[in-house]
Length: 125
Image (tube, rainbow, N blue to C red):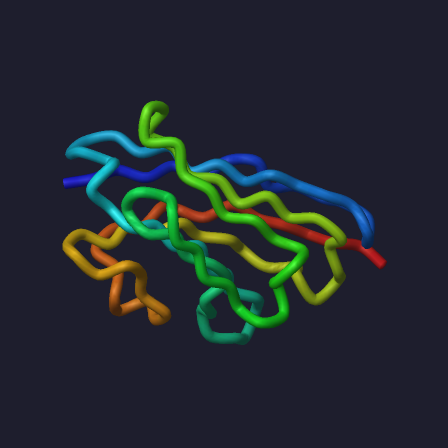
């Protein structure tokens, strides 16, 4: 069992930056691929970025490439999502998720085994 707790959300103006953190406890964090998803009101939860277990391979939603950076510090049991050049359309609740096994990452919520509670990100225009 892995427990995930997100932090770092908030209100920011367009063009600003935020760094989300996802602290993990429980079983060995280093063996998990991690993903970030987001869900805006009235919309389905969508993939944002993912990183494999070692942190050496990353994958991004097209609209976040070049603006968002996912990373993973296995020594601190923490994953991060650095978000730069934020846009109003980035407004959503952001969730981190952990995927157990040999897969590098998953693109869909059903691929993941554990979820955090979410943190709100609001970007004003």
